[in-house]
Image (cartoon, rainbow, N blue to C red; front, side):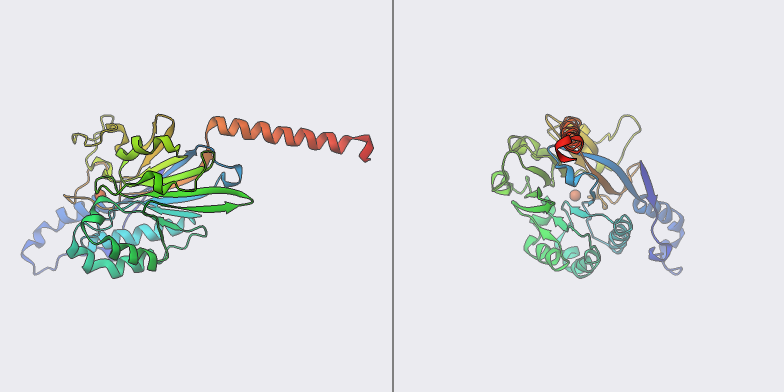
Length: 313
Ligand SMILES: [Fe+2]
């Protein structure tokens, strides 16, 4: 299920009448329409070993902002408004916030300000992408922290609800050779439930032995050009398979969700591949749900027995 949101028309930067390329205005308008219409993708996210207390929790994911122009900044601001409109409990940001140093220094203040508007009750969690390490990730991480986000660079953070725990684990970027999955999972027990944030879906083979509950990624931009049924014609650069370019896919014994991102790189072009905000409702795996159901049934049956016991009446 998905909804589409267009940019506020007042956010659109039109070329001035006097500019020589103003005749290209209709083309520019179509291009902005294609690249700015954010799709909200609603997904029931299957999380292995999810404690029942966390069932139904709502989380949003945004990725690959690539804030390199005013248009990209407006798209980010629009995405923040959309996320706030969904009233999520958690927000995940999965890297590649800018493409180069010049745009980072130009937009870092507005980037921090935009993300500061996110106020989910259980927190905003952010990781680095490959582009962030070719810039100054220290500067970006500082801006993320100042906006109220928790930056996870090979670290984890535990959330507690009615005595049950859920770990948010952030693994650093694979291509930058900074991914240290074992460090990221330090203190997490094999039976604990985890939501793993990794920018690149190709990190999956390196984290599988740590038994993540689910993995959230970005990096691919959905392939940017998508042909119905066939998918992206772009030659896959993912080693784990073309299907992991976007959406929810099962990898061995856990699921990976790949967000299509908000921005685009190297070309600011998208065809049949809208920018995305993912909206997750956390659910257990079918087997987990079976166990939960039988546990609930046992408790219910015991309760009934106690209530109907003649010794207690
Ligand atoms: Fe990216």
